[in-house]
Length: 321
Image 1 (cartoon, rainbow, N blue to C red):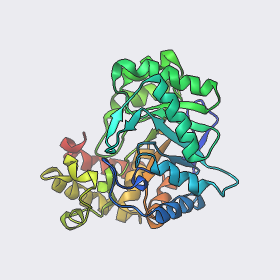
Image 2 (image 1 turned 90 degrees about the horizontal axis):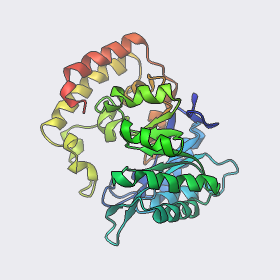
Image 3 (image 1 turned 30 degrees about the vertical axis):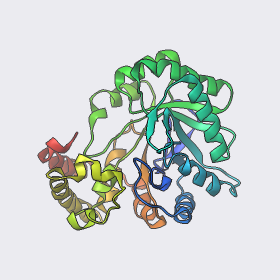
Image 4 (image 1 turned 135 degrees about the vertical axis):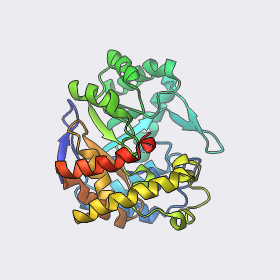
């Protein structure tokens, strides 16, 4: 599987990393019920396929995703690269709380290390820059985790260009983690260029836009989602936007079929077409799901395919939000 260097670090990431949001199971922003055994099987299968890094967060299942990853890693002699996050806590009702207090950040780091069963986190990321006025002090606390050798490198998720520049004045960011997909292209208007010029890695989440770009969604499939699946509250999964996206994906399927690929693989390869992008985070909750998407890591899109995709996206420009 292809690898790309993460910014100025010594980390070589496979161009697909395994995302573990869904394996956290039910919580405020969960994806419905999830079998722990199936989660562990999925993690093991991802590593067998050559994926060398895992992205997670304490908030995924209120600590549960990290616990499951720790169980999967325990018997392994050679551990994958681990990226996790901080800044989101939860209350007794399992509702998320933004918390960038320095003491909370340090506690989170210690708790993540315990749940994951590792001595050091490879990439420690601020999950959300909220509240904005506290991001510098939170970043300082994260930098102290580097100095204490609890963490190797720092990253920031969901930041604006202005916020990233502020963080850079405090301590170097090894990477950012923004959303990026055919439906969400905001990083193309500043962050992409800045990170490219400053050699800051970019690991993108939601390249398949929470499953919408896999080609499996239609009205019937939507009706099968669990009532506690957070996606049902997402405007992209509601009329009229949902029907428009399904129509767009139907057109993309023709391009993918011409290449002998799936539309999910096309969506991931499209994200990876940019040299500034280090890797795409691809979620999976069953082994067969990561088996279906992993081949996209080695697919380099030809210019003609990129142009055909762009023609379709331009006709659905109102969806690119």
